[in-house]
Length: 325
Image (cartoon, rainbow, N blue to C red; front, side, top):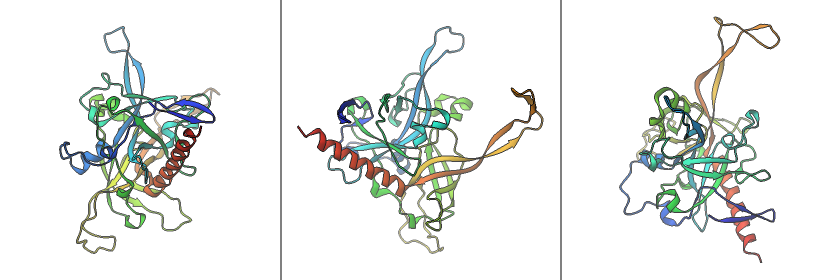
């Protein structure tokens, strides 16, 4: 673990901190060849908390990992030390509307897929204390990032297939109708199908449904696919295509690239007319059910790059300060 100086005090970073060399960012020669999707899945991290559960027919409770969100490992741009960071949706780390301010989250990596959630709780990461947050946020987007500075022994792997900013898709290369793939850990799968399906990120396919056409519009992207609690913070990638947005055939197919981070899903209130309940005021009310519409909003890659530049500047500044005697 490393210690950082902030606000004239020494703070212990339990954050996922990979002691990085170039081999952490590039493919290692002794690694087996992975498909494009497998490499993207390796960079996708399950963020969760550890809870006490009581198995059936047992009076003894045990600790178990519960997914709360998704993150992706990205290389900090133009960093001489080739360090990595975890990028996710800001509300995974902090959500005032739900009074969600966790001090510690746990991270599970794709290469631990053979271990059940009940067997392996991941690496504990302290993201805040009573006075300080150990992560950085985008001032205008639902994005958060935390530097990864953990030993390879603790991570359990010497090389990581991180996403690089050179693999970010430029806004001009996006078009409505373009196929995409989203990776994440939707919690509903654990409840309905079992936790065995939660040791690897689930892949879902969709298409880009909406793009901003002017600077006055929101800097966000909508795509047509289902996303549920747990998908927040998950990466979205384009699928290779052989035609451009004008319908012309592309001689060299567009490579798979990073498009953005899942922020939220569109919900539609639906009346449940067959049921009535009495509220605290003793008046009968009709409860509402929130139905997922199949549209998901993502924070685009250029905003993720803005956040990474903030992280880079903060890290370089703190590194210089730590060397001042």
